[in-house]
Each structure stands twice: as structure tokens, then as C-alpha cells.
Length: 230
Length: 269
Image (cartoon, rainbow over all chains, first blue to last red; front, side, top):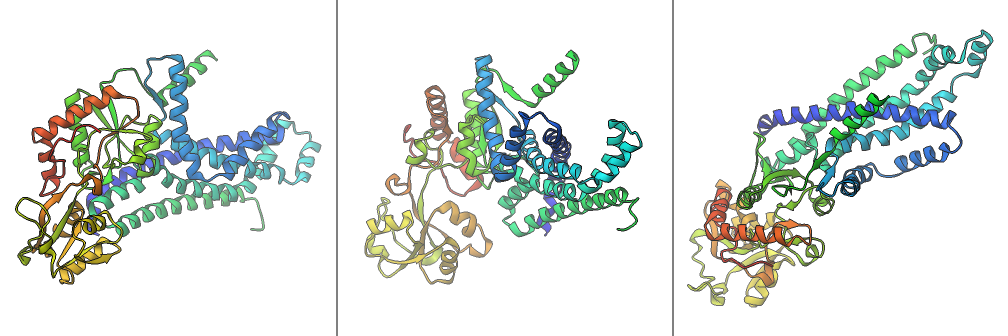
């Protein structure tokens, strides 16, 4: 266990990297989810197959594969485009941080598209009709009646996704991002103590998911504060 | 609107890592998790035999070396996808890999060597370094099943009594316990896992390092994308210099008590 001491700063740094990836990916996946759900519900007809394709591909392929395609594919594609524009360019590339954050945000966004769409459709039609009967215009109707009910329905599904997203960050070590899985691999190579080093990673992830879970629980309590029956 | 567009373009641009045509910087792919060849110390410094070799090659051909950590399985795909320009990651030169990428001349050997108790008084080799089959009479030699070492033993000393193992660890244990008199293995592995242990200080390598390409392969080289004859030539020249002026010897001795580079400059492959 003593061997961990020398690596604590590396693990801390790796944890910051993970939180960075998580922050970026969380914001982006909510954006993709909202855009996807909006396109599914209100988009023009030509958009439907595209959203469908997006959801099918990103939900239906292994996460590791998508990550590798983003990382390797981006380098080949961008370099080809770059060299077409300016032959002097030797290479164009997305660094592992951004390739990883983008890849996992697209995956989570595909799930969130369906979660948000279901939440929109799950709002009690009676309350919408009542709001219309009271003469609410579409915009206030959305923000005052639909949104507060929608997010109550969406939160449990969204919460699962938010926890799954933090665990996806562990995949990004395969493209060379120096996060805590990578730190563990480096430490194992020097100390020959795989069990100890992997346990540290497990502990860090458990700590992070515990914090996320408690934040989500608070959000759910707030969303449901008008509900009499829990 | 124009300003928004400009901002977006600038942001996207800053996400990309681009480089102009200058060849004075080379990105080197390595695992960063393979001690003592390429690894990070607890202080965060990248070090190891591969890393030393890459830095020295960079110095000699006048290129800045920048390391990229890459998992082993994706090493060749990443090189081909232009994630970096060279592989310096203890990658053995094999026929199969040569179909995809080019290699420099070897900067580390693939070798076999015997390990035995220091006071055992074995005479496995003659004074000129050739095998002495008489020295194998009455002793038991341990080696890994269906390894290159087995092929070598069967070709050179067909009458030797061989004890087979499925892995290195049980072989070391039996050597320490006296169940076998000598083992034949990769001396680098034996040093890292067995000889460097304080409890095994009565054991050492016996006889010369056996560097026979037809059994053990050419060794470890610097990988690069195909069709870069200039770069390959520059790297080979640098490695030749490093082999001949003792630099590779110095790097070897930083991590092992014996040299791990080709003793004779074998020429380019």
C-alpha cells in the first residue's frame, strides 16, 4: 500500500482530467439529447431518418469502438482535408481529450434523445389541455407547464446516463489520455502491484459516482416537491 | 453573426493540433507503461531504454522529439493514422509487421541465455563461445514449452534432458529449489523477475548471450510508415553511431547489468 504514496499526485491530476472530460461531455450530451429529441418531435420529415440513424448507430455499437473510430478516424480525415487545402500541412489531429469527450458525449446524447422524447410525450395531456383552456400561449405553456413535468419524468433516466457517462471516461485511456486508468497502468509497470493500483481507481470512481448520485437525488427531490405522493 | 461565426471557427481551430511541413520535430509513439523500456516514474518523468534511444536519435538527426503515449494494441494503427511518426516501444521486427510498416536497424537484441547457480560450476560452453554438449550431461535444463529456446536446445544439444514449463515463474521457482540445474530464457526477463531479487543473489547468467537471428529474431527496431527512405537512412546512421561509440552500451547499463544492444553493427534490414 505504501507504493501508492508516490503516485498520489498523478492520481489527483488524472482525476482532474476525468472531471474535465466529464464536464465537457455532460454539457454536450445534454445538447445533443435536446436537439435530437426536438428534431424527432418537431423536425421536418427529411430530418427523421437522420436522427434515427444517429440514435441507432451510437446506441447500437460498442462504446470502445466509437471512441477508436473518433480518435483514429479524425486524424486520417482531418489530415486528408487539411492537405487538400494546404499541401504544406503535415498532419491535423484532435487531441485525445477532445476526441474522447466528443465520442462519449455522442453516445450519451443518443440515449438522452430517447429519454427526453419519452419525457415530452409522457406529460399528462390533461394538464396541457387545461393550460390551453386557460389561454396560455405556446412559449409560457412550454416553460410553465411542460418543462417542469418533463424533467420530473426525464430525471431518473438522465441520472442513469450521468453515472454511466463518468464510467465511460475510463475508456479514454486507450487513446492515450493520461487519466487515472492510465496512471494505474504506469504505476503497475513500475511497482508490479496491479491489485493495489486498480483498487485506487475503483475507489476514485466510487467516490465520484457517490457525489453524482447524491446531486441527482437532490434534483429529483426538488423536481418532485409539489407531488403529494412519493 | 459574423463575429459568432469567427468565434466558432477560432474555437474549432484551437481544438486541432496542426503542424507545418518542417521535419525538425518528430512525434514518437510509445506505451509509457512498459518498465524498464518505456515508463513514467512516480515523479512523472518519461524514462527507460526506448525513451533514451529515441531522445538520442532525435539529438543526432537534429529533430525535436515529442512523446505520445499509446496503448500497445493500437500502436501500428496510430502510426498509420499519423498520430505520430515513429514507434520506439520495444517492438520486435517481424515479417508480419514489415508488411505494414518499415523498421530501422535493431537497437535492442532478442537473445537467449542460460541462468544457473553461481557455484554450480557448469561448463555449457567452450572458451570460444561454442556450445559444449558434454557440459550438458547429467544436468536438467528448464525452458518454456514451444518457445524459441526449445528450438535452439533441440538443434544444438539434442541429447540434453529438458524440463518443460508453461510460464517463467514456475521455472524460476524450480531453479531456486534445485529441481533444475539451469534454465534457458530471455536474460532481460530473468533479470527483472528473478536475478534482481535479493533472495536470488546466488544465481547469475552463465555463458554468452546467444544472438542467433534464425532462432530469436532480429530484435527491436524503430518503426515508421513505409516509403520514408530518407528518414530511415538518417535513423540507421544515428543508430550505427550509437552502437559503435558505446552510447547504446551506456543506455543498456542504466537498466541492466549487461548490454542489450546488438554487439556487432548488423547493417540495415
